[in-house]
Picture 1 (cartoon, rainbow, N blue to C red):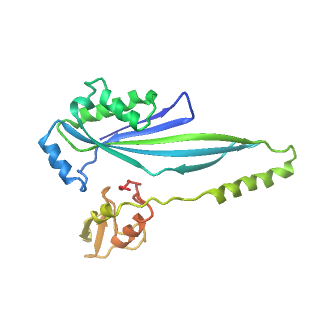
Picture 2: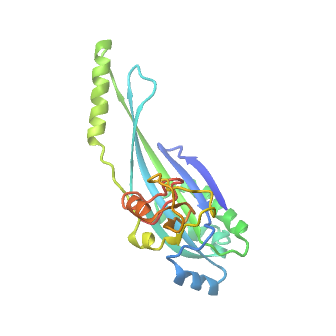
Length: 245
């Protein structure tokens, strides 16, 4: 189950994409915590995953569409054990709002996030699967470059802006953790057992009886292919499911 919402701050050029959801299976890297939650049935494991993106929009006079560049920070993860009483806002949201402030979530967004979390808890019923709160903050900076009134200079200046942006751009790969990669499910492929017949990374067909690896999102790849992929990107190649970083 999943709840999502988009919010824009009226006070600054900042927008939030918020998704609150529960996985279908308990993450394999948390067996001890799962036992704890089984003993304390009124407790949920809640993980906040916050990522900040700086978007620069450079406008050139006489051009309607800006040149846009984005720089994303690493995902910040914070995990807590919270009672159903707290998540259902029976304390008027005091505990959650305190956590929001520690995560630098603007106060004008607190109400919307509280309602999303409470809705998920109600929908969960007796389930005590973890609750994941994904928060993507995008801060937009707009710049304007005034062009000379001579059309012959437009292409030259525009090329300069693009070249400088490319030279200053440094991609920052975010690999998945080694422990999460080692924990991926491995099995032997059986012909006809799945509609997927080839690895989406190398585009080669799976051989009957060959070893393959399944991501938590259920997508299947050759073991060597997905391990190499996750060394530079923590997301599933097909659906962008995020692995721990």
